[in-house]
Amino acid sequence: MKPSVLVAHPLLPEADALLSAAAVVELATEAEICPREILVAKLRDKDGLLSLLVDEIDREVIDAAPRLRVIANCAVGVNNIDVGYARTKGILVTNTPGVLTEATADLAWALILAVARRIPEADRFTREGRFKGWTLGLFLGRDLAGRRLGVVGMGRIGRAVARRARAFGMTVVYADPRPLPAEEARALDARPLPLDELLAAADIVTIHCALTPATRGLLSRERLARMKTDAILINTARGPVVDEAALAEALEEGRLWGAGLDVYADEPRIDARLLSLPNVVLLPHIGSASEGTRSAMALAAVRNLIQGLKGERPENLVEA
Ligand code: DGY
Image 1 (cartoon, rainbow, N blue to C red):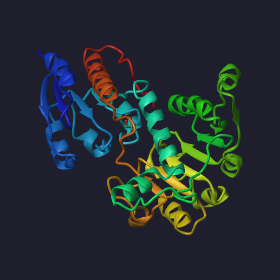
Image 2 (tube, rainbow, N blue to C red):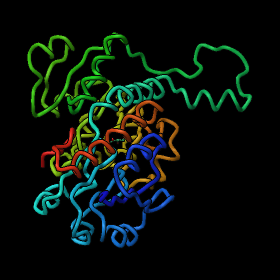
Image 3 (cartoon, protein in one colour):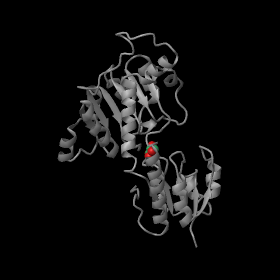
Image 4 (cartoon, rainbow, N blue to C red):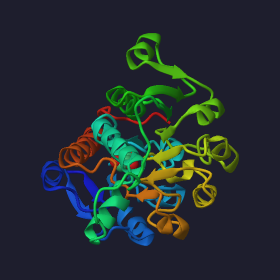
């Protein structure tokens, strides 16, 4: 008999086909957000769950699913799942690392360039018919060449972002509890620094750590105050890593030059001050949103789910 699986949100067709061949599939909702009561009710008789990062899989949800054996998250981050609790219930949790590294690094650089060179502002200005001719002072931005990039979190994505820095003539410093192996640090030309020193030294700070109890609020008000007043902050990791209110205040008061954000403390809600500031570029959490990458993520999540349900060790098992 095929296992019974709940898919919290619509999958891409290729992933849907793969999963439907191996399991009896029920779709929880077509909506962006799957109401908690639906998740709880529909999980009661399911062996597996394919979730997105917007689905909060906490104790209550897990307790409501007595048959559940695998939770396959279609994301690299698993901060939406109580992984420790799932483990105590014998439930495997999987994620989708690797396949989204390059797309997310590209997006971090897209934000760096967009903020540093004021691209969205200049685009709006041009469309509004306000371009009346070339002048020396029109939309002056920040140079990248010769500046220092500070990478917070030197995992796969942090390293991919650091690799691209060379092409822009930037030097790289990074903060991570686990220093890079010497050879890799040499190849990336990246120097480790304690976080507080990195914040004071970097011209662009880009965040690439996972959201964990240790990194929640890591860029606190005090730490943001250490950054240079002409620095730029980029966050494509998770919103709660940054004190969003303190960031908005710093940007409003000119204590930071700009910010590029793909993630927010309480998605999809965005602080009204951030929405109103011209020196902030805001995106709707699209770090991994390229056709190839999203397809690879969905297929990886399905493969993980099928492997776990077959009693095999999934390719991307999350170790709590
Ligand atoms: C993730 O995978 O955790 C990203 O936030 C979405 O790709």
